[in-house]
Image 1 (cartoon, protein in one colour):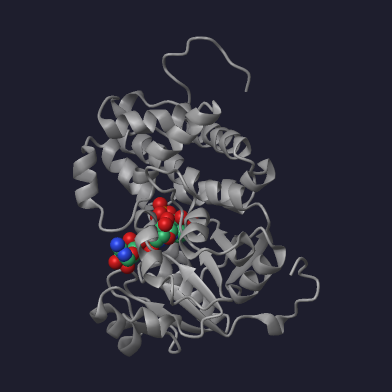
Image 2: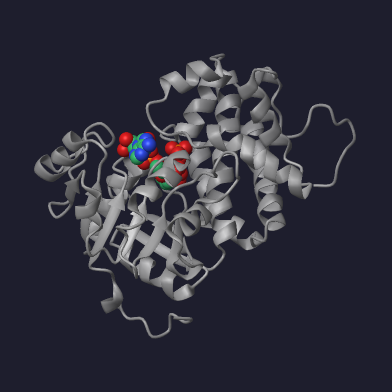
Amino acid sequence: MNSSDHLTLDAKARKVAVLGAGSWGTTFSKILADGGADVALWARRPELAREITESKRNSDYLPGINLPRSIRGSSSLEKVLDGAEQVFLSVPSQTLRDNLKAVRDLVPHDAIVVSLMKGVEKGTGYRMSEVIEQELGIGDDRVAVVSGPNLALEIAKEQPTAAVVSSANLATATLVAMTATNPYFRSFVNTDVIGTEFGGVLKNLIAVAIGIVDGVGYGENTKASIITRGLVEMTDFAVAFGGRAETLAGLAGLGDLIATCESSLSRNNTAGRLLGQGYTFSDVVKQMNQTAEGLSSVAPILELALSKGVEMPIVSQVAEVLAGTMDPRDIAPHLTTDPMPQGE
Ligand SMILES: NC(=O)C1=CN([C@@H]2O[C@H](COP(=O)(O)OP(=O)(O)OC[C@H]3O[C@@H](n4cnc5c(N)ncnc54)[C@H](O)[C@@H]3O)[C@@H](O)[C@H]2O)C=CC1
Ligand SMILES: O=C(CO)COP(=O)(O)O
């Protein structure tokens, strides 16, 4: 398929699998079920799978939310993946490769595989779509990614939200977007997988920076300066790797940056705030009971930036605060060691 022109709403996937029953995997299952799909949701823990199926709740991750009656939870990968037309992946990024090894022979051979994750692999710097292609041995035309300003709990409460689905193949992106659309959730499409994925990864790092300055007690000027200059870093980085600048000005870039930097629901923002309040990196890791991808992405992103000569002063300072070599009070929207004015 090279074009999406011939697709009609009948092409919506009927049977889908979601792997990972944390806050985003569970919320995305609700999005898909409310769009009309038959959803099987894989949870590692059998007791959580049972709670999802029997009580239509995931009380640890989405307290107070009633899930659609049609969602079935299961801790059996075989059962969840059986007959799935689209497979959505929502586990912590650093665990994706091992999880894929376990499902390699179970993913139906013609299924579209979709990353919902916003991290890069430590040690390799690979994006999640790249890890999927490598481990499942499938072409980029069968892989898509979803990104955008998508704080799970707000969407679980059915607050109107938009996202973007990206695939090298527009028809694949369109099929996924049709399946992931319902009255409160609208999916747009693009073919810039690199820009879309890096947007989701990089905004986490800027959100950590915002959390840090918030924790220190700085106000709106500091935060607006970091958000604005952070978007420049995000765009320079993504473009250096072949992404499109306009993607970073869209939902997967600026949109997600705004949501994540403004919300106390963001785990990256929260982790940063704790650092800004003086907690050490290991204290913060102990306190976080949900995934803050930014903490693992800082090092691989800076390695990738170095390989292309991209300057990332804000992300570099986040790395220094995490390492305990910079006082959070000194974080700024520029390198404090650079005395010369630069062009904006
Ligand atoms: N929560 C949100 O608002 C959003 C999250 N995302 C992304 O979704 C991805 C998943 O994040 P969340 O669901 O928020 O995290 P979470 O911390 O709420 O849930 C993670 C889930 O993965 C499971 N898990 C942990 N280690 C595992 C392993 N080794 N193998 C299999 N499963 C494992 C946990 O038990 C849990 O069910 C991340 O990449 C995140 O950046 C993207 C958009 C929104
Ligand atoms: O990606 C998100 C919102 O779009 C969620 O952000 P956090 O992972 O920081 O909670």
